[in-house]
Picture 1 (cartoon, rainbow, N blue to C red):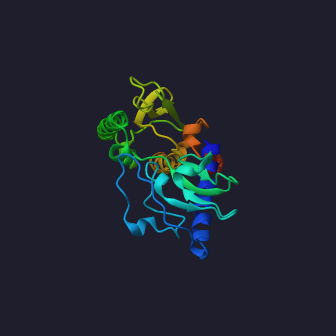
Picture 2: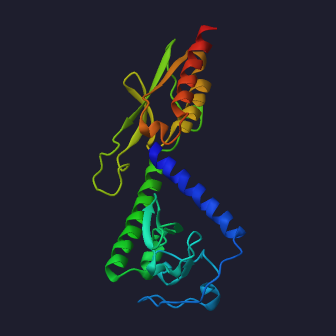
Picture 3: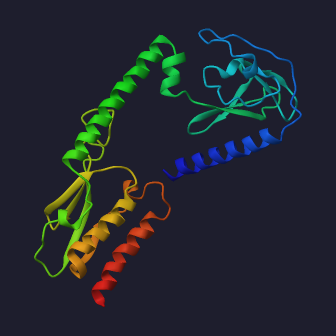
Length: 260
Protein backbone atom coordinates (compact mmCIF):
# COMPACT_ATOMS: atom_id res chain seq x y z
CA UNK A 1 0.00 0.00 0.00
CA UNK A 2 2.87 2.38 0.77
CA UNK A 3 4.38 1.60 -2.63
CA UNK A 4 1.05 2.53 -4.26
CA UNK A 5 1.05 5.82 -2.34
CA UNK A 6 4.64 6.56 -3.40
CA UNK A 7 3.93 5.85 -7.08
CA UNK A 8 0.87 8.08 -6.98
CA UNK A 9 2.87 10.88 -5.30
CA UNK A 10 5.60 10.67 -7.94
CA UNK A 11 3.00 10.66 -10.70
CA UNK A 12 1.25 13.77 -9.35
CA UNK A 13 4.58 15.54 -8.89
CA UNK A 14 5.60 14.75 -12.48
CA UNK A 15 2.29 16.06 -13.77
CA UNK A 16 2.79 19.34 -11.89
CA UNK A 17 6.32 19.72 -13.25
CA UNK A 18 5.04 18.93 -16.74
CA UNK A 19 2.42 21.65 -16.45
CA UNK A 20 5.04 24.16 -15.32
CA UNK A 21 7.26 23.31 -18.31
CA UNK A 22 4.28 23.68 -20.67
CA UNK A 23 3.60 27.17 -19.34
CA UNK A 24 7.22 28.23 -19.85
CA UNK A 25 7.64 26.63 -23.27
CA UNK A 26 7.27 29.34 -25.92
CA UNK A 27 9.35 27.80 -28.69
CA UNK A 28 7.16 24.89 -29.81
CA UNK A 29 6.37 24.81 -33.49
CA UNK A 30 5.53 22.32 -36.24
CA UNK A 31 3.20 21.59 -39.09
CA UNK A 32 -0.43 20.77 -38.44
CA UNK A 33 -0.97 17.08 -38.95
CA UNK A 34 -4.01 14.93 -38.25
CA UNK A 35 -4.86 11.29 -38.51
CA UNK A 36 -8.46 10.11 -38.26
CA UNK A 37 -9.03 7.13 -36.02
CA UNK A 38 -11.92 4.77 -36.62
CA UNK A 39 -14.91 5.72 -34.49
CA UNK A 40 -13.36 9.00 -33.29
CA UNK A 41 -14.67 12.32 -34.60
CA UNK A 42 -12.14 14.85 -35.91
CA UNK A 43 -11.18 17.54 -33.38
CA UNK A 44 -11.83 21.26 -34.07
CA UNK A 45 -8.88 23.12 -35.58
CA UNK A 46 -8.21 24.91 -32.29
CA UNK A 47 -7.81 21.56 -30.54
CA UNK A 48 -5.30 20.46 -33.18
CA UNK A 49 -3.02 23.49 -32.78
CA UNK A 50 0.42 22.14 -33.79
CA UNK A 51 2.20 24.50 -31.37
CA UNK A 52 0.63 22.66 -28.42
CA UNK A 53 2.26 19.69 -26.74
CA UNK A 54 -0.37 19.14 -24.07
CA UNK A 55 -4.08 18.70 -24.74
CA UNK A 56 -6.41 18.62 -21.70
CA UNK A 57 -9.21 16.98 -23.72
CA UNK A 58 -7.16 14.11 -25.15
CA UNK A 59 -7.72 10.63 -23.78
CA UNK A 60 -6.56 7.05 -24.18
CA UNK A 61 -8.65 6.61 -27.34
CA UNK A 62 -7.92 9.93 -29.06
CA UNK A 63 -4.32 10.91 -28.24
CA UNK A 64 -2.93 9.07 -31.28
CA UNK A 65 -4.26 11.72 -33.67
CA UNK A 66 -2.76 14.66 -31.80
CA UNK A 67 0.48 16.34 -32.82
CA UNK A 68 3.38 16.19 -30.34
CA UNK A 69 6.90 17.57 -30.23
CA UNK A 70 9.89 16.15 -28.33
CA UNK A 71 11.57 18.81 -26.21
CA UNK A 72 14.88 16.92 -26.20
CA UNK A 73 15.63 16.01 -29.83
CA UNK A 74 12.97 18.03 -31.68
CA UNK A 75 11.12 15.06 -33.19
CA UNK A 76 7.56 15.91 -34.27
CA UNK A 77 4.72 13.60 -35.10
CA UNK A 78 1.42 12.08 -34.13
CA UNK A 79 0.63 10.30 -30.92
CA UNK A 80 0.25 7.15 -33.02
CA UNK A 81 3.98 7.33 -33.76
CA UNK A 82 5.10 7.66 -30.15
CA UNK A 83 6.25 4.70 -28.04
CA UNK A 84 5.23 3.61 -24.56
CA UNK A 85 8.17 4.19 -22.21
CA UNK A 86 6.52 3.39 -18.90
CA UNK A 87 3.35 3.43 -16.86
CA UNK A 88 2.13 4.55 -13.44
CA UNK A 89 -0.82 3.65 -11.26
CA UNK A 90 -3.37 5.29 -13.55
CA UNK A 91 -1.64 6.28 -16.76
CA UNK A 92 0.62 5.25 -19.60
CA UNK A 93 3.74 7.27 -20.38
CA UNK A 94 4.44 7.91 -24.05
CA UNK A 95 7.82 8.97 -25.31
CA UNK A 96 9.75 10.04 -28.38
CA UNK A 97 10.34 7.20 -30.88
CA UNK A 98 13.84 8.57 -31.60
CA UNK A 99 15.29 9.31 -28.14
CA UNK A 100 12.58 7.86 -25.84
CA UNK A 101 12.31 11.15 -23.94
CA UNK A 102 9.09 11.54 -21.97
CA UNK A 103 6.45 13.36 -24.03
CA UNK A 104 3.14 12.98 -22.21
CA UNK A 105 1.11 11.02 -19.68
CA UNK A 106 -1.98 9.33 -21.10
CA UNK A 107 -4.53 8.44 -18.45
CA UNK A 108 -6.09 5.02 -18.68
CA UNK A 109 -9.71 5.34 -19.88
CA UNK A 110 -12.48 6.18 -17.48
CA UNK A 111 -15.70 4.19 -17.59
CA UNK A 112 -17.40 7.09 -19.37
CA UNK A 113 -14.67 7.14 -22.03
CA UNK A 114 -14.95 3.39 -22.56
CA UNK A 115 -18.72 3.74 -22.99
CA UNK A 116 -18.17 6.51 -25.55
CA UNK A 117 -15.14 5.32 -27.51
CA UNK A 118 -14.66 1.62 -26.72
CA UNK A 119 -15.44 -1.42 -28.82
CA UNK A 120 -18.80 -3.14 -28.49
CA UNK A 121 -17.23 -5.72 -26.20
CA UNK A 122 -15.54 -3.07 -24.07
CA UNK A 123 -18.76 -1.07 -23.80
CA UNK A 124 -20.65 -4.16 -22.65
CA UNK A 125 -18.00 -4.81 -20.02
CA UNK A 126 -18.06 -1.17 -18.87
CA UNK A 127 -21.84 -1.21 -18.58
CA UNK A 128 -21.43 -4.22 -16.31
CA UNK A 129 -19.05 -2.16 -14.13
CA UNK A 130 -21.64 0.61 -13.89
CA UNK A 131 -24.39 -1.77 -12.84
CA UNK A 132 -22.17 -3.46 -10.24
CA UNK A 133 -21.16 -0.09 -8.84
CA UNK A 134 -24.80 0.96 -8.51
CA UNK A 135 -25.56 -2.26 -6.63
CA UNK A 136 -22.49 -1.83 -4.44
CA UNK A 137 -23.47 1.72 -3.48
CA UNK A 138 -27.04 0.65 -2.75
CA UNK A 139 -25.78 -2.24 -0.61
CA UNK A 140 -23.35 0.09 1.18
CA UNK A 141 -26.13 2.58 1.98
CA UNK A 142 -28.36 -0.21 3.25
CA UNK A 143 -25.54 -1.57 5.38
CA UNK A 144 -24.82 1.79 7.03
CA UNK A 145 -28.52 2.28 7.68
CA UNK A 146 -28.68 -1.06 9.47
CA UNK A 147 -25.33 -0.58 11.26
CA UNK A 148 -24.88 3.17 11.85
CA UNK A 149 -21.63 4.79 12.89
CA UNK A 150 -20.76 5.29 16.55
CA UNK A 151 -21.21 9.02 17.03
CA UNK A 152 -22.38 9.48 20.63
CA UNK A 153 -21.71 7.91 24.05
CA UNK A 154 -25.49 7.54 24.36
CA UNK A 155 -25.31 4.74 21.78
CA UNK A 156 -23.12 2.63 24.07
CA UNK A 157 -24.38 0.32 26.82
CA UNK A 158 -23.65 0.88 30.50
CA UNK A 159 -20.93 -1.44 31.80
CA UNK A 160 -20.65 -2.31 35.49
CA UNK A 161 -16.91 -2.75 35.94
CA UNK A 162 -14.06 -0.88 37.61
CA UNK A 163 -11.71 -1.43 34.67
CA UNK A 164 -12.96 -1.62 31.11
CA UNK A 165 -11.03 -2.88 28.11
CA UNK A 166 -12.73 -2.50 24.75
CA UNK A 167 -11.38 -4.48 21.82
CA UNK A 168 -11.93 -3.41 18.21
CA UNK A 169 -11.80 -6.43 15.89
CA UNK A 170 -11.92 -6.80 12.13
CA UNK A 171 -14.35 -9.48 11.02
CA UNK A 172 -15.22 -10.83 7.57
CA UNK A 173 -12.79 -8.81 5.47
CA UNK A 174 -12.30 -10.65 2.18
CA UNK A 175 -15.02 -13.19 3.00
CA UNK A 176 -17.24 -12.23 0.11
CA UNK A 177 -20.07 -14.00 -1.67
CA UNK A 178 -18.96 -12.46 -4.96
CA UNK A 179 -15.67 -11.35 -6.53
CA UNK A 180 -16.80 -7.73 -6.73
CA UNK A 181 -16.54 -6.48 -3.15
CA UNK A 182 -14.12 -7.74 -0.48
CA UNK A 183 -15.96 -5.56 2.06
CA UNK A 184 -19.31 -7.23 1.45
CA UNK A 185 -19.35 -9.04 4.81
CA UNK A 186 -16.69 -6.96 6.58
CA UNK A 187 -17.29 -5.29 9.94
CA UNK A 188 -15.42 -3.55 12.72
CA UNK A 189 -16.81 -4.95 15.94
CA UNK A 190 -16.47 -3.48 19.44
CA UNK A 191 -16.17 -6.07 22.21
CA UNK A 192 -16.11 -5.88 25.99
CA UNK A 193 -14.66 -9.26 26.78
CA UNK A 194 -16.63 -11.48 24.41
CA UNK A 195 -19.73 -9.33 24.53
CA UNK A 196 -20.41 -7.36 21.36
CA UNK A 197 -21.42 -3.79 22.16
CA UNK A 198 -21.34 -2.15 18.69
CA UNK A 199 -20.44 -2.82 15.06
CA UNK A 200 -19.98 -0.77 11.92
CA UNK A 201 -19.16 -1.71 8.30
CA UNK A 202 -15.41 -2.01 7.75
CA UNK A 203 -13.34 -0.06 5.24
CA UNK A 204 -9.73 0.67 4.39
CA UNK A 205 -7.67 3.09 6.54
CA UNK A 206 -9.96 3.65 9.50
CA UNK A 207 -7.39 4.77 12.10
CA UNK A 208 -8.85 8.29 12.26
CA UNK A 209 -12.22 6.81 13.14
CA UNK A 210 -10.52 4.62 15.75
CA UNK A 211 -9.27 7.81 17.43
CA UNK A 212 -12.71 9.42 17.24
CA UNK A 213 -14.37 6.31 18.65
CA UNK A 214 -11.75 6.25 21.40
CA UNK A 215 -12.78 9.73 22.53
CA UNK A 216 -16.43 8.65 22.57
CA UNK A 217 -15.53 5.62 24.69
CA UNK A 218 -13.62 7.88 27.09
CA UNK A 219 -16.62 10.19 27.37
CA UNK A 220 -18.88 7.24 28.15
CA UNK A 221 -16.71 5.26 30.55
CA UNK A 222 -14.32 7.89 31.88
CA UNK A 223 -11.21 6.75 33.73
CA UNK A 224 -12.58 3.21 33.93
CA UNK A 225 -11.55 2.77 30.28
CA UNK A 226 -8.02 1.40 30.57
CA UNK A 227 -7.49 0.27 26.97
CA UNK A 228 -9.04 0.40 23.51
CA UNK A 229 -7.35 -2.52 21.79
CA UNK A 230 -6.80 -2.72 18.02
CA UNK A 231 -4.45 -4.87 15.98
CA UNK A 232 -2.07 -2.92 13.77
CA UNK A 233 -3.34 -4.17 10.42
CA UNK A 234 -3.00 -2.75 6.92
CA UNK A 235 -6.70 -1.86 6.95
CA UNK A 236 -6.31 0.10 10.20
CA UNK A 237 -3.28 2.12 9.07
CA UNK A 238 -3.88 2.23 5.33
CA UNK A 239 -1.42 4.46 3.49
CA UNK A 240 -0.61 6.60 6.53
CA UNK A 241 2.96 6.46 7.84
CA UNK A 242 1.91 7.80 11.26
CA UNK A 243 -1.30 5.82 11.88
CA UNK A 244 0.11 3.18 14.21
CA UNK A 245 2.06 5.78 16.18
CA UNK A 246 -1.15 7.74 16.79
CA UNK A 247 -3.02 4.60 17.84
CA UNK A 248 -0.24 3.65 20.29
CA UNK A 249 -0.16 7.16 21.73
CA UNK A 250 -3.91 7.09 22.32
CA UNK A 251 -3.74 3.72 24.06
CA UNK A 252 -0.84 4.92 26.20
CA UNK A 253 -2.79 8.05 27.19
CA UNK A 254 -5.51 5.85 28.70
CA UNK A 255 -3.00 4.19 31.00
CA UNK A 256 -1.55 7.54 32.04
CA UNK A 257 -4.96 8.94 32.90
CA UNK A 258 -5.70 5.82 34.96
CA UNK A 259 -2.46 6.17 36.98
CA UNK A 260 -3.03 9.80 37.97
